[in-house]
Length: 434
Image 1 (cartoon, helix red, strand yellow):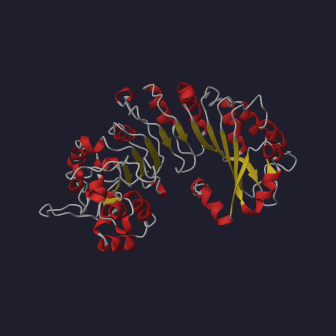
Image 2 (cartoon, rainbow, N blue to C red):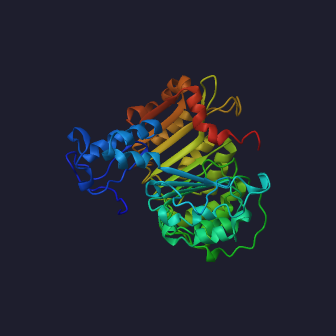
Image 3 (cartoon, rainbow, N blue to C red):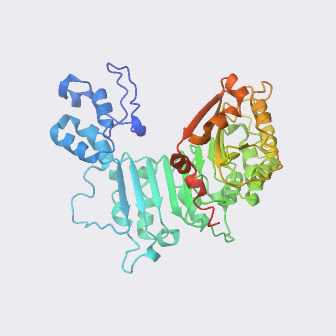
């Protein structure tokens, strides 16, 4: 059977592609396979209807048994994700490795850190999957979790994996989760395996830094790489290695960079790379733990050459205390004056809801911030200022920006306490440990 491709048949809805929930962009086989669907509804409608069951595997399996014509719609959800881990086993005498590999779009590899497991696990645990990668023709998202490169590199399984050029060329999104930061050379080599890579999300298991003798010029990433995120990484993740590498190979294709807090020691290398990117940068996100972080970032001038910046997301840029006080420091105003305002379309501010106080005698500059954001000669393209705050403090936050309200710029996301904490959970989970 031919590999399914995204349908471009308009049908009665005039749909060129399916805008399904949770980004389930379901592919349809040629229309001749869908002539006997229930109720006379077109395939596009049944595709959308089945999408509402995307996370109910029992219901999907019932649908599979009820109507043969629903098969493809259901299988795209039932077999969407496949996980292969170090504890899985496969007998090569079996005739089938996976029941429906062509429907898998998200492939996850879980190494479980071999040195933490009981004795007896094979370092070639990846080999059964590596031998069958050519069957997974629809995978675009690869997740690698809890793998120590020292356990994998140079094994026969890894060499077989790297030889699967067809599979590697499909991958557009790569998640490296719970992966040691070093050997850093192995991380660079892994990133460069994927010629069609568009998005990389990196979450290290630990951030020990040792000196390495790296030949950065030999590691050229895909020119299709557009998005780089470390926003879920532990607090103060050292990222200078990435910026030094990307600067060394003059890589200017990145358009979106999403970071957690940036160590002061990394500001120089980050600034150099952002200056190299210049107007190519479209979206930027960073978290500030303290007002001093804002001051240091502003002084670095990291974004002064980002003249194409359209969306800026700032966490901790404004502080909101338990007595409803909204606090904006002078360093926040200074920071905004370093941002080229000609193309900035959207400013997202996630308020830091904390009991810590800066200084009782230090006044808030929220009114000045409100005025700066509505300045017609500063942010000429600004269309939206979006604030995310805890529900009980949202009214006070809204009152702090009357000019933005009158200008029609202000939008709010007011969340319940547990929802708001969930928003910041990935940022705060390592604060006490550090």
